[in-house]
Amino acid sequence: MKFYLITEDQLENLGKKHDSLLKTGTMCDLMLDIAAHADDFQTFDAALEIANSELDRLELFFDTCDLV
Image (cartoon, rainbow, N blue to C red; front, side, top):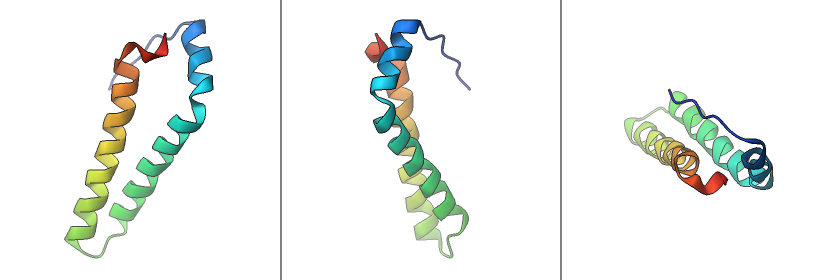
């Protein structure tokens, strides 16, 4: 688990990107829900792959200095 220290300026930039981040988080939640209720391995695997890519996108967003 990673923790991020965010300055006031970075928090303001986060507010501007809120919708995009929210959509990414929602997509991840949806894919995890689909995986949890999947009846077959292919659906489960595909949903987890998409969820992981959404998590990677969020992690990349916070790991880059795009917040400044």
